[in-house]
Image (cartoon, rainbow, N blue to C red; front, top):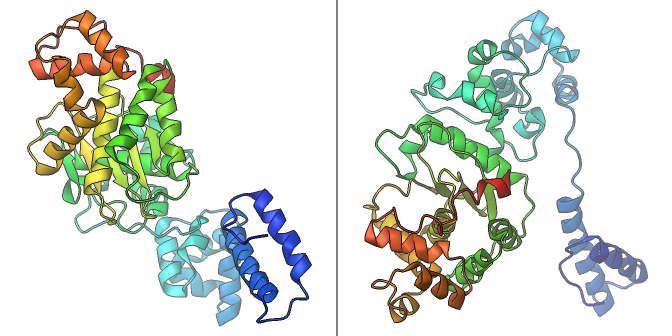
Amino acid sequence: MIPKVIKNETDYEAALARIDELMDADPGTPEGDELELLVTLVELYEKMAHPIDLPDPVEAIKFRMEQIGLKQKDLVPFIGSRSKVSEVLSGQRPLSISMIRKLHEGLGIPAAVLLREPGAQIARAPEGFEWERFPLAEMLKRNWLPDFQGTPAEAKKQVGDLLGAWAARLGFDALQPVLLRQHVRSGSEADGYALTAWRIRVSLLALEQRVPKYQPGTVTQDFVRDLVRLSYLDEGPLLAREFLVKNGIHFVVETHLPHTHLDGAAIMLLDGSPLVALTLRHDRLDNFWFTLCHELAHIALHFDGEATAFFDDLDQAGIDTHEVDADRWATEALIPSEAWHAADMGRKPSARNVLSFATSLRINPAIPAGRVRKETRNYKVFKDLVGYNKVRKLFT
């Protein structure tokens, strides 16, 4: 067989069978080189597809104690009191984030082991952080913190530990308030803590999706036009999600939080994979397709390999250069200006012309109808064409 990257169990089994055939090959021969390469490919696949489970945190603590000769009383500076140490080591008390941080820093136990999340790091709150400003009640109502079983009052008392553990998979700076470090196209009343909570939520949902490795340069206007043709179908938005995921782009729908005023966001995750997240705040097909293309425009134009994010309230005028460029790019990707002007859509925006134009491009009529409404600033026309109440029900 010709050695190749192992992508599934079938490839894996074939590689193992070939390794069996080559076990007696001499080093330095073509067969020996093939054996060495196959073994390397199998090891890479096993690390990805069959990761070894992390050890139990309590067992890791006990092992570390034995390694360096500590007794239970020696854990008091890390855990808090002798009774707490006893409860933790017996499994009666869970580790808090403050305990995890002290055990990690003081005893060198990996944070990923203590948090039981591969690759997890303890999220650190920046100086002057105001935990009480997080919309904790709404987060609990939406079951964003499923491991917490107490009352809202109890949650408020341990909000730092709760949110630190919740955001751990996203790295050290996951709790950094959005308004301090990201591009936000939103009203002045947008709340940075609410935006941060929503960003963490959609990023965690994205990590649950299995997507192939994203190839930079994938998102072009031709790519988006292929995507937009799915709008012609009744379940176009759902098919768009599948289309993006198969091309290495995470796609998440999460209702916006109060005081965020979001339509959508484009976020680059720590592993370099892009995420498009939408709120469906306006339940219309024209809004869905424009917002989706606008976020893809950010990926195409503004992501240069560094972790960053763009948060968009498309009711706000685009003043920032990034937003103006994304608006223009998305408009052109949805409907090429050459086709728009050739059909004289700017001067003949009748319902019949909109329907005929949409059919000629094999796209949903909501898209040209929405463009006419935006260009003329007349949002009373074509109410029956822009697809009211057609999107949310697909993602329920």
